[in-house]
Amino acid sequence: MSKIKDQDTIDSRMDEASLIIRWADKYILRMLNNDAIKDDRRRSVTRELINGLEGGLKYPVSVELLHNDDEMRVGFFSPNTGMFYIDMSLNNFNCLPTISISGESTANND
Image (cartoon, rainbow, N blue to C red; front, side, top):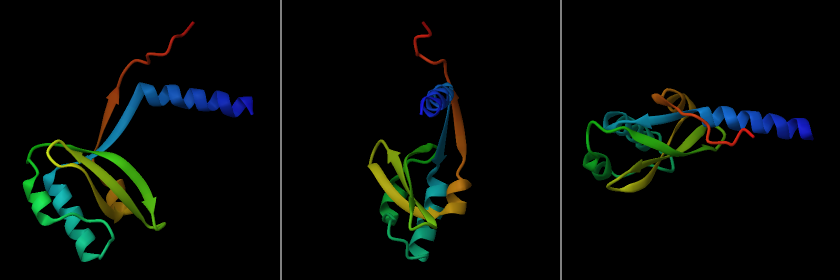
């Protein structure tokens, strides 16, 4: 059991050193939402919400859940609208662009 705990601690430190965040811009969100509507997925947003998003921004994925074993339910955050969710195929989720944020761990190494 302690080996599992040690591995969890090592993995946690690695995660702190580099964080990968998926995101989508307005163009990508429009395509994903249109697919969700066309494929009759359970979570999509109104076209007005998408049209009201500001262009040129990267909207980060804040929540990601495997849903129905073959799709992802993904929550995005917008400063103007707050959280909104779009269901998408696993392929579309895996194709979302990413940014990597690196930083030093704040853990005390005593």
